[in-house]
Amino acid sequence: MKQWRTIGAWLWICVATLSWTQPSAATPLYAVNSANACDTCHVEPIGWANPAAIADRRCTLDCQGCHISPTGGGQRTPLGQFYAAEVLAMHGTRPSSAADLTSRLPAGAPNRGKYRLLDGFEGWWPGATPHREIADRYGDIDPEPVFAVGGDLRVMIVEPLEAQSQRESAVFPMEAQLYLSWYLSQSAVAYVDVGWQGSRTGLAPEGNPDALTLLQDRLWLREVFFLFRDLPYATYVRVGRFALPYGWRIPDHTVYVRKDKFDVFRQAYGVEVGFSPNEYWANLALYWQGLHAWPGELDTTRRGPGITAQGGIRYLGFTLGVSLHGMGIVSPGSHGIDESEFMAGPLWALNLHPLVYLGEFDYRADRRAGGRVASLFQYHELRWQGLRSFTPKLRYEWADANIAVLDDHLNRVAVGMEWNPLAQVQLDVLFRHEFRPVQGDLQDLLVQLHAHF
Image 1: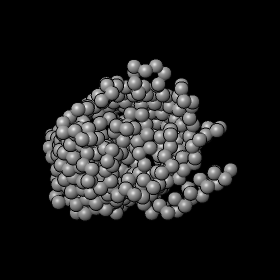
Image 2 (image 1 turned 135 degrees about the vertical axis):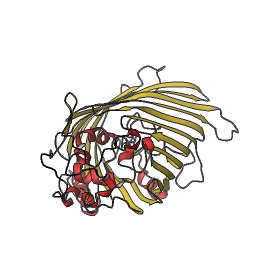
Image 3 (image 1 turned 120 degrees about the horizontal axis):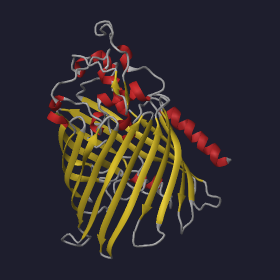
Image 4 (image 1 turned 180 degrees about the vertical axis):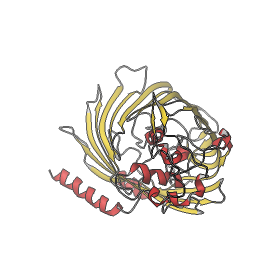
């Protein structure tokens, strides 16, 4: 009982402390589900124009629709802030309430649009005004800022639930970031993401009692880049340090498909190009990973050149894509590439509104001094989007760390919910059960408070 009272007290403290910020909600399922909210752009009284040429269109289900970083996460664009306040939050003023309807609402215009897999999109009523010129539609959001400051904070509570658990309850800041962006022009942005680096293993089955110490000791420059965007066919180019474009950007670095490979700590230095013209998208990054003098980068970070890419089709009813990754690793004390890692696999999503399904499958092949190890990973998630701001979810994961070894596979089932009571706060609660054939099963309850401004 004492542990639960402690958890409750921390929750109330966190809610009170963070009640002035806006939600981050950086999850790929929001991009998939945004197909059901096309009326936020294309149905009067909004009046946003729909360019005839595909090269001029910016409508996309890609991460760059809401985030400055084209691969998602981090600071939101003005359109991302608009979507969060207009669509996601349960309470609060909608930016659209500031719009002057009398001058733009023609007779007979539908007041909402909807998308269904079998019926297509209904209520289509595009306007004639470029979206950035409808200032009152954004409410108090500046559609064309010169400088923008933001922040992201995740506070995590972990409660082990095994009968005789060797793990301890923990409350710690999982992430604390500050963002600064400078819009040199409509197409050029300079971006910095700095903060305190969280734990790499604090939510892993083994736990990490030094997670808070690690966070306090790690000043972290996560992403620093110049971005050239808003080019024809929604093309972009960025140069600097950035997160690599592989798989779904699931905001939980302990899921099997991201842990140890493409978690929140996987950044590199190089150049990335991509495009997302309506239904199709592709990203390609050429990079060097590992610069031990960089603030917050651990000495254990693998060093070497690499290439990461993904692409596919994003339609209103489904997403289908593939990711590829290859990297040559320079071992400590070595002057050449003597190890390597390779990853490949499909990703997909199905929009059966209000039910949304997302999945990923990965094959990995790591060549180390001890030989070659091949492994397989799966991720599946179902969400019910029928209730505004409240989203129940069901998750299943599977991992086989070495396909040549018998009974080393893992299965994990999770059930939970996300709640956006205000435009300021997101609460994520998840119960997980991990089935381990050798070590014994694990159970835990994760409570995450996520805030963004």
